[in-house]
Image 1: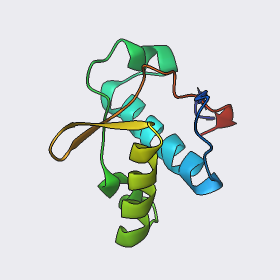
Image 2: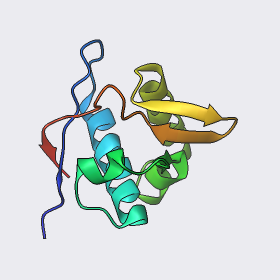
Image 3: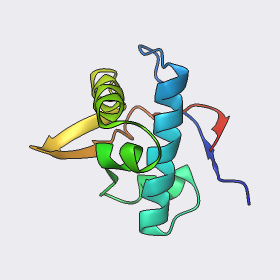
Image 4: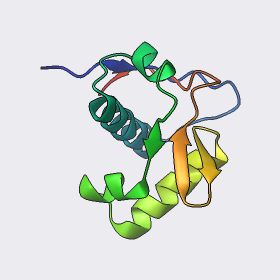
Amino acid sequence: MMAPTLEINMTNATFTDNEITALKRLYAECLAGMGGKTWEDLESDPYTWVYPETLVAHGWSIREAGGTFSALIVKGAIDEVDAGEWALNLKPKVRIAVEA
């Protein structure tokens, strides 16, 4: 079964292949956690929490996951909601046309 398409459309950010892969993984985890199938499902879910540990569980080293996650925060794809709590930033329609 093919995962849904993740689209990221942020005008001021350029993402590396690694960051795109990480966003796809985080996106898929959010959908799985809330039982959704599409980006629109996430838009109606106020808790799109993401964690660097997800990346570690999928092959990134702790150091790589921290660096990638930090880069996504700097680029606006992830927001720190509270200390140690992060969520996908859905407001600017973080979208990249790729297959997850």
